[in-house]
Length: 361
Ligand SMILES: *Cc1c(COP(=O)(O)O)cnc(C)c1O
Image (tube, rainbow, N blue to C red; front, top):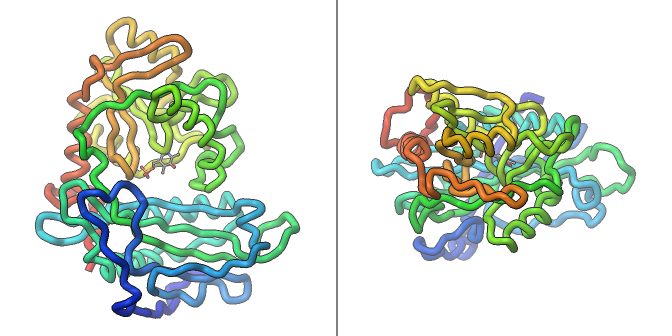
């Protein structure tokens, strides 16, 4: 079960199995994939087995595989950064694997052996080190994923799983500047309910969210801010990011109560805020409190936190017929400070007092 003795076989891509490198200036997000992938299989009898670093390739999966029917699928997202010293770093990767295992527990899926899987992640990134972009802000995004592969239509946990990791070179999120986004406060659809699967990074949560997202985008907003499903009043998170408010000097984010994703960037922002001597609160916050703070002039900044964008400043919240403009629609000082500090740690340009950075190779 611990799998520390799991053997990992290496099949290096041959010349013709190597993939064409995309234009570094037009990477976008998740459109290109690197030369190699990591794959391992699980069944009841053998546990995790047949672990391989191999050329990126198609899977052959039975059409009755349970993932296609009942959606047992979980994933993670983390990045590899190339520093000015040409070293490659991962940011808190162990946390991603531990969170994957929390998602696995919720979805009745097997846990991965954290140490061994971390070794595989590092070996994979090292193998594909030429795919880690070197322009400022660009990274290699890693997508660990687990799916249920047993061919069976009776509803129960699958007894066979596939775990894989693919890598995608992605562009700088803020290639056009660190500019605030406009967010739609969603009060029709909900993302997660108490007792549900909101705190798991499981595929169905994202499938369930795209209708609200497309409707918000049609109205000119880039993401939705989710309210709680019971009272439609407490703020939860924004799109696939956690959310922070700065009100009268207090840094506020909603508590982890089972319906929001425990973001690793969220945790890092909280830690930095405490390091900087700020008043930091994980507490329930309602949309009405935000409206009131906007009206009395104490709402200073709002930003999202997540691996993809690190920090995304929010310049406007649309709630029913009301438009809440934050900091004149400009990026706030603290949003910028968190962004710069986190990026500098991720790229190895600054000291790393909490040991968040993991060198590859
Ligand atoms: C992944 C994710 C986050 C952010 O988590 P990070 O670990 O900071 O990348 C926040 N909310 C949702 C819904 C997510 O899927």
